[in-house]
Length: 152
Image 1: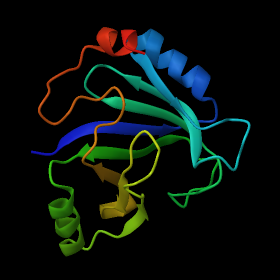
Image 2 (image 1 turned 180 degrees about the vertical axis):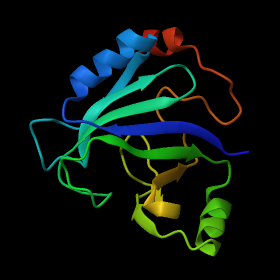
Image 3 (image 1 turned 135 degrees about the vertical axis):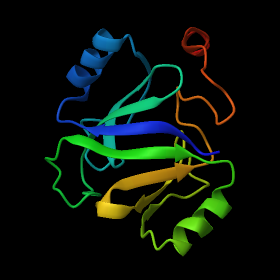
């Protein structure tokens, strides 16, 4: 069964937003992406947080408006679903008429890759066979964040 394992928040200040969620809910920082000072390096810069099950990406989008709401949009950007069979899921989404809006290269050197779609009401979601950093696999209940962070 597919599992919800990723939510991305668009924010102007990833540092302050991540600090808030870490203090409010004891989430742990499990990674970072992009470079705030280099607008040509990636789609966004930000901080990945986790509760041991879900990856919460706190991102400042720099140069691609994936939602059509402008780069100054803040709020929930998209959610991600971890699937066991990506090809089957892609076929199902095609059958449902869900438009693909971003297909990542599976050979990418990024930490993960995903394919983004628009669902009903133009809500953006992505699917991946690979868990986001700090997120449990489809078969795990939770991961041990302390062990993950100690391994770094």
